Length: 115
Length: 112
Image (cartoon, rainbow over all chains, first blue to last red; front, top):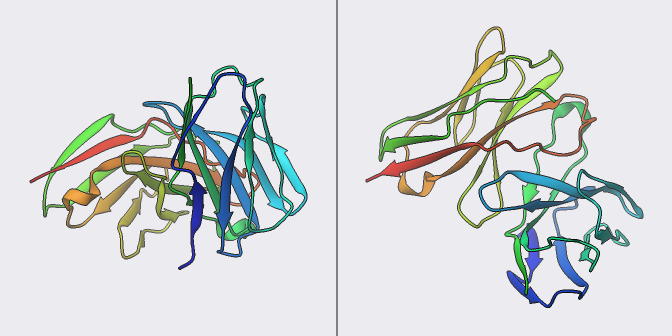
């Protein structure tokens, strides 16, 4: 089955530790995205990548880092510099179709709790 | 991106049509209207999008007013599994805005 997988579903870390969230897609999509969602709020974009080995900062990139070494994979590292990392993290992917419109497909999310 | 306004919450009886409104009075001619939904603690799910014509797919229908200042998402026969937060989003047609800008959405509760 084609889709996006995120692991793990729940993640606990101690304050001050870096942690990497996994995102893999087998949809052959060019673009991938990381969003953060806080309770009762909408999604905010952290980073996105439209092509391998290239990525751009979103609205709230501070304290996060990403890599895009393979088309299928877009891992997100939450560093110790992120002041409030506890949140629900969502990965998405899309075909880059320009004017035709490009719906984004989301993974199931990872709920990160920093203790 | 144009700002959207949606009611905070709505109820709908199971089996009846759910009509979710969205105002986007500042939408420009080169912006699509997208609808997504998010079931609690899951990733958002794409539903439908349109530019100026009405659209229908296996999940829903999208009705866009002639002046494009508002739209309505219609779930023709709501089920309990349709209970979710529904987001109306506008995005440029040319794909220049990569991100989806989610507002607070409408919490739809389908009642048995």
